[in-house]
Each structure stands twice: as structure tokens, then as C-alpha cells.
Length: 213
Image 1 (cartoon, rainbow, N blue to C red):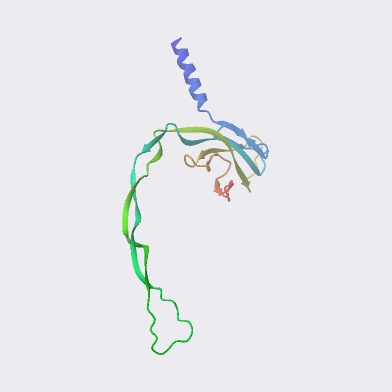
Image 2: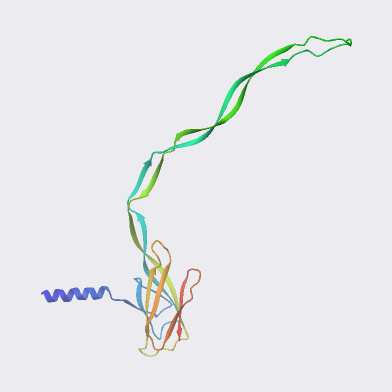
């Protein structure tokens, strides 16, 4: 019984790591994971679009905190001095009618007092500038699965006949955590002739060309 359980566990383990094998028999195919073995046969079109299911990891705050920071600040304030200033103002009435050369009218004055504001300088006035600060005590990672497409073009490759086939290992992965870009690793597993793979994608679209060396 113990030997049977060991064999069963080994079978499950090998199955978990088995690569999905996709036959490219149409212009568009889908893969239920982020990695697969793509197989080119005599029925494979020259251009194939493959959709992968790619795990995308994004960090988020699992323990947000808020602190109240007590703080006193100072601001500059202009200081003025107000004082009463009195002056004697000439209130002599103007001359009217003809007068002689020796006319010397009496002069009258009146005392006028006003308040004047004079700039003295500045002073520092304290005030409450307390504030709240938000921060994260612990971050966590959320993983979701998103669909991403890659176009593969088989350019001027040898014709396949009978049971002949080419196989390629293709893996899609997130370029960096919290990023939206997906990159692809493509390599030849088996082929009827030496191949080279070149990346041709532009404007964020993933595209590769497989051609003979």
C-alpha cells in the first residue's frame, strides 16, 4: 500500500508540471496557462495568433494606518503703531474787496489732531498646523489572470510532410510586479532545420518571426 501511494504521488507531481501541448491548426488558438509547447504541422498557417492566460501580480496595502501629527507653526505678521498727531492749521479767511497797501489782517489758526499708522516691523505669531498622515503598515500581493496575445509568423520555413513537426517552448510572463507589460520567451525545442526567432512587435503588440537560419 505504501508503494502504491508513493507511485500515485509521483504521478500527480509529474502531471502538475506537464506542459500543455498546442497544435497550431488554425489562425488563432488559446492556451489555458502562461506556458505551452506550440507545435507546427503541415496544416499550420503562416501566421498564428496565440492567446495566453498570464498571472499578473499587483501589490496593495493590507494594513492602512492614519496618524494625527500635532504641530505648532509660526507665521510673520506686520506690526504697526498708531499715534495721535496734532498740527496747527491756518484758518485765516481769504481777503475780499479792496484793501490798502498797509492792510495786515489778523491770522487765525486751528489745532487739528489725526491718528497716523506707522509701520514698526514684524512679529512671529504661532498657530496650530497639525495634520493627519496616512501610511501603510503592511503590503500584500494580489494575483489575477489576464489574457494576452502574441502573433507568430512562420516565414519561408521548410514544408512539413507526414508526421513531421516543429515544436516551440513559449512562456508569457509579467515584466515586473505592478506592471502591465507582458514579455515572451520563445525557444525551439525540435525542428526539421535550424531556425532563428526575432522579435518584431511595435507599439506594445507582441509579434515574433520564425525563419530559417
